[in-house]
Every structure is written in C-alpha cells, then in structure tokens.
Length: 290
Image (tube, rainbow, N blue to C red; front, top):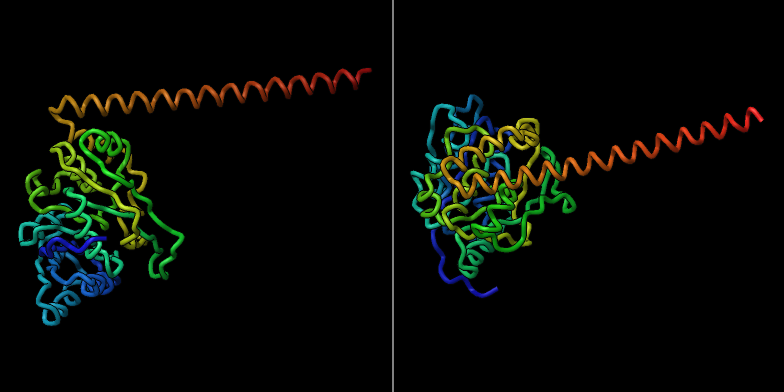
C-alpha cells in the first residue's frame, strides 16, 4: 500500500458501562496501536462497578486519554457526548469490551484517504469472553464500495458494518446528527443508513482488524434476533422519505414472496411424502391380503 497522504488526529470513541472486567484490555489495544496520532475519549455511562477507577488510573499514564461521566443514558447518548468533545478529523469506535489488532488505525487511515471515501470498515474476529483469539471465527463484512444506491439496498436487508471496525470522517457524522438517542439498540445501523441517505460513500475491506467479544452482557449476544428493533430503526430513517419508504416496501414484499415460495415448496414436499407413504402402505396391505 502507498504511503499515508497525511497523519490526521483520530478520535477514538469508547462508551463504558460496568466494564471493569474488560476495559483495561480495550484501552491497552488503543495504546498499542502502531498509529499514534489519536485521542481516546471514554464516557462512563453511569457504571456502578470499578470502571471509573480503572479509567482514571490511565489518565496519568497517557495524556491522550480523556474521561467524562454521564448518568446512564445508553450507548447512543454516550457516543454523542464523546463526539461532542472530540477534535479529530476521523472517528473510530471501540466498546469497552472489544479489542483492535495493533495496526488497525494505521491500515484504515491509509484506506480512507487512498480510496477517497467517507467511511471504511473491515472484518472482525470473534471470541467468547476471555478466550484467546480464534483465527477461524470471523464476522465477515461486505467487501467493496457501498454508495447511496446499492448500499441502501444492502443495509435495509441487514446491518453489514461492525461498528468496532469503522473509521469515519467526523464531519459526516456530525452532518447527519450523530447517533439517535431515541433508540436503545442498533443505533449504529441507524447511523450508517443516515450516512448513505446523505450520499456518503463507504468501503469494506477484506482485512480482519478488530476482535468482538461475546459474553452474557454483550449487546449483540442479547439483541441478535431483535428484528422488531431493527424495523423501528428503518421506520425512523424512512420517515417522510419516499425513496427509502419505497425501498423498504420493495424489500419486504420480495422477502414475503421468497418466504411464500419456500412454504409452497415445503407443502409440495410434504404432500409427496404423504402420498408415497400411502402408496407404500396400500401395497403392503395388498400383498398381506394375497
């Protein structure tokens, strides 16, 4: 890859709620980055454990780390507070229980400049709680460019962008109003949709640059099948937007048609099996009578 065009400040956004078991690893994975022009803004979202004490211990170690506290208001509000305090040209997001590989920022700051896009993202390893990284467990993201046409279609179907792998222009995030504070889950999907609606261009690479941790309190572990919440996200984004309303309606109709076709094929299969069994039974009884 060509040399970096410039080395801008990156603001790392880290919300933390009762993260005492993991936050040291998360902070250390930022400190250990090969790209060193960053600031880490941590917002303690009303933790009741020792999260605050752990964070404060780092303030005297590294002057690039900043700490803020808010009453519990969920991740969207915590991220927005951190963004409002940030000074970087780019934003990166790391939750207090996740990790980055040590050259994550180095690779992505080159990508976002050389690809001339507004946001880059990548694959992520998956670990369970405190286990070692398994190179075979990977969240595979979309690879290639996503614009307001194809990107919207793909994102309406499902979220394809792991937030812990994102590097994005700060100005673009502020332009679309940052994270929604009206929803408590999938606010990242909501932000990507808003960016696409506002003509942002996104790029997914084939590198694996982050490590997502699954544990009993992790958001994805608890919300993996929260389809109703994701529908609410789409509803808010599509409000008074005819184009998005049309795309959502078109997607839902196509999905229903696919489901009906699958159901119809299953019914045919059951009918065939039923008649085959009946025929076999009749043949058996016929030969028994003879």
